[in-house]
Length: 194
Image 1 (cartoon, one colour):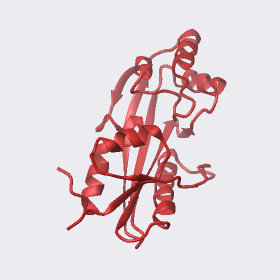
Image 2 (cartoon, helix red, strand yellow; image 1 turned 120 degrees about the vertical axis):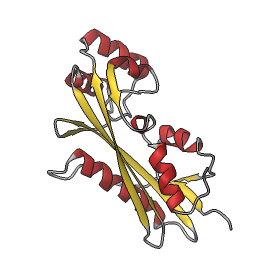
Image 3 (cartoon, rainbow, N blue to C red; image 1 turned 180 degrees about the vertical axis):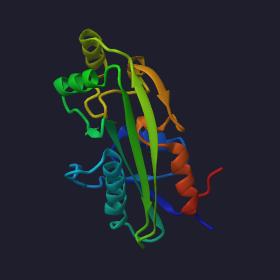
Image 4 (cartoon, rainbow, N blue to C red; image 1 turned 90 degrees about the vertical axis):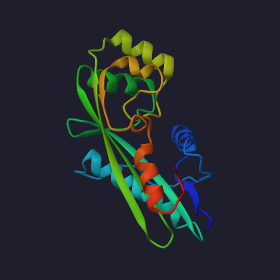
């Protein structure tokens, strides 16, 4: 019996690199989903909704036994979602706002099939930031330019120096795709994994 096809509903290089670790061939498709938060929507609910929307947007374009994998991450500071900063000033402001604080990162994922089947999960990672000075934040932002990362850091790089601690079940979740949960969902969908 052959394995179904898989398509990553994301153009994120971080998610692509993570998914490659599982050794399953996959295609990449842009989901074309509006990522604006809904009024009153919690960061966790937003991450779940967007992961499902991305997976379904690509799944509807697929045929046969194919699955689409969507993921989204929201940084949660006191119930407010922190998105991708987009530019230097916003990244500096986000990091200074998180200085000395604990921030929850909700990383949601969903796999969807053209026939309507869908499996989804959400991983929670708690990050405690060190007390950061403006100079430290500026040096970090200038070094890594994390403008496309929720929370304005790259934990797989120099961003780790900003933290006091990380509490999580899956170290890959903070990078953008929780591989433990991804593998579990893929097995549910019929993919042969160890």
